[in-house]
Amino acid sequence: MPELLITRAGPLTTVQDHGRHGTAHLGVPRAGALDHPAYLAANRLVGNAPGAAVLETTLGGVAVTATGTPLLVAVTGAPARITVNGQPAAWGAPVFLPAGATLDVGPADAGVRSYLAVAGGLVPPPVLGSRSADLLARLGPPPLRDGDRLPVGTTHGPPAAELVPLPAMPTELVLRLLPGPRADWLLPGSLVALARARYRVATASNRIALRTEGPALIRARHAELESEGMVLGAVQVPPDGQPVVFLADHPTTGGYPVIGVVPEADLPAAAQARPGTPVRFIPTAG
Amino acid sequence: MGEHALLLEVDDPEQVGALYAQLLAARADGTLGGGPTEIVPAARTVLLDGVPQPAALTDLLAGWSVAATAPADGPLVELPTVYDGADLADVAAHWGVSAADAVRLHSAIEYRVAFCGFAPGFGYLTGLPPERAVPRRATPRPSVPAGSVAVAGRYTGVYPSASPGGWQLLGRTGARLWDTAREPAALLAPGTRVRFVPVAGSADA
Image (cartoon, rainbow over all chains, first blue to last red; front, side):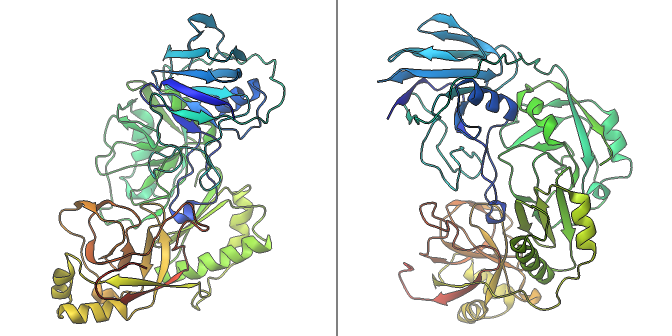
């Protein structure tokens, strides 16, 4: 079976696919690629089925070597300098990687996460129906390290001759906010205050949540909210009043009030917003 | 809640169990309208996520009444437990009984998994009467060993893997709570009934 050798793992590179579904009642998060459109585009470019597993990088890129057999690869998501054995190659296009050749995805020029798909898909053993690494529940393949080898599948179709638009990575993150179930646990007018204030993406952001910093929202009710189910995009307000937007590795239940929910369409941009990026929340009728 | 989710609220944890069972049955019958992908019971709520048409489902559920009767019985899991936990004496003192009586009290109850969370396979077990509720430890332990049987509030739980934790430790079981090489991976799922069977010495299942 063909293999991908990880020659430079970068700051955080994980295997991701469409995630785990139907397991939240067991306490198992969904996981999966954070920038879903970029993930799907990478798979299309190399002729993979939509659910195939890819690499998701974080800021610093990754370098991989085709061992034994040539591989067809493609990189999407955060734009970065791409080279094959030191020669420039195209971002957002199928790239042929001869046996023994090394593809280097440099640090992201903008955005955070690039997606590297390989024709045939990455096929480490699935866990509960998915090959995604889950950094909260610690399921699936652990974050990659230099020297790791990943098996590559053989099932794929023809590569797509598609022009993937170079994404404009957000200089300001605008997140719509649908009504949440516990807005009444915060002071009246908190939604208005949230919409008026400027927040920034906090450095503590990760695959579990986009954390923001700005004016603190203040609780009206101080009783303990009993744990309840959480959804992707839920905006929780912890005791420090700084809104937290749940991303793919979010816990399945939680006990902080949810003031609103960011619709899924706005989350790919959240996945690409760097720490310090200004954030605006726009309350929207559900 | 958001585009594709509904959060249903009921009066108490017992109704959660009944509503969860009703929802699972309705989804199996196909009467919930092509979804939801996730049905997540919790303390006083059931979350429905992956609902194609939340408004239509809201209308359908408005006609429901939550069964007053107990939910259908799930499978019974017996967990051989060595009651030698670091907090057993404290919990017994809180209950005003001897350690031996605390073990008898705790192991005499048939528990039910109300919901899971915190970590894969961690079940929140109801059954402890309200007067036996115990506070969490003031300072959580940095590492609680896998298999630890613990109580907090009205809940009993078993840590599936070593993790930080603030629950009061009563003992340990050798049962594997979570094993992704097994089907199902989680020994305890919502609705599962649980008994703790006191054993001496080794807690290997």
